[in-house]
Length: 266
Length: 309
Image (cartoon, rainbow over all chains, first blue to last red; front, side, top):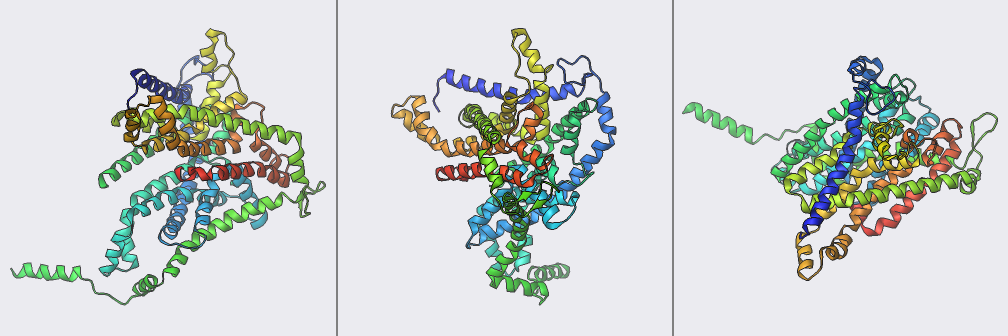
């Protein structure tokens, strides 16, 4: 597009400025994780690596990570199964109430977390009479993770069409064989992307988790929230924050590679 | 030679498998001739899950808004009443907090759109393809950093001894500290990528040829943007605003961490469930954001924004 040099450089400058603002808070956390100050004061009065050592020995933090990974993995598997099934149903069949169902899939993530949270808390404790535990978190997380799998898989199904599957059936393959050898390989990367997003969503969720976690069940976000306001623990929270940002590069890298591969396939 | 033909015939046998009459095969035949059964099997599990876990829970919560808590025992009594709704609709506290929450959500949305438009425009229409890829990653990256970590980061930045105050000190300016301003800044920060991405995608779909045609016909670049680009990306902008508006409306953790003593609707729901142990009133308060969100979604439905999410 033809724009004056001035307009171009202004836009470029604005973009750069906002991105700098986006990354400054994350850098502050990185620096604070080495600071000798416990009250987040700037500039740091001195530097130490003590917090890093303490964080990796903190029993609470490590257990919280283990709980979060466990919840995330199980919720992701459930979301993958339910999300894939519902994507096939909505994409390959036309039936009454289809739009209502696609709204139903989005609703758990569209309504504020606190509403989903208290609704599920009330459902588990009062209506079902089950005590809150790690499993109630898993059920809650799976419910709002379905949408990420659904979005990815249904977009892929739309693009795939049914030609290859029909060809496979014409050549004598049954429903199962066609799914295993024709449909699934085409879906694989969409399933992976959806699963990755579902896991990330579950791993990071705090509001619904607060309302569905049993006594003594601590996921990483709950641990962070509990320790954020404790002066002796706050720097450990900074360390965890830095580690989480660093680890988050892995899914970005994988997602980027997947996107790259897709472009080549297309 | 003999050996080679042996291999050949074995390969032929492998290429045309015998159709064996197994249970799996029969199931497959049955499914291919009964599409409705196929649909039923596919949809049964997810639909049951979503209806039983989510819809039942949500409807039960909304019904609870019409019950009340026994003042004596603290138990919920099934006495049908409109008291909770009346309290929420007429109570001054609820008016003030609803207006404050709406104000925060609107401010966050305006700030995010104002910040997102130039970035998205630069990414989609000016940056080289290589730069474009780098910018997309740079915008996406903070999305993967944990929500709490980002709020915590702003707590450090905004702290009385934090980097913002340190930066402002030479100018003799007092930083905003923890409060509504800090909440608005933090929420804008949190939802910015969600607003940039749909607008960027919307701009990508505007063909350059249209803009060129407009300038060939004599429009200045500002006129092209206003009359050609803007109407085309309006649904995408609204899609972005759905994220920032709805997410801000329900938030209570950010305001707890950086908002000082200020309260938003989420906090009222939270305290009514927790300390006050009054689920019916909490459910009645929860109706406010639900009504606002449905109203907003209904209002923007016709713009086609929902397809741009």
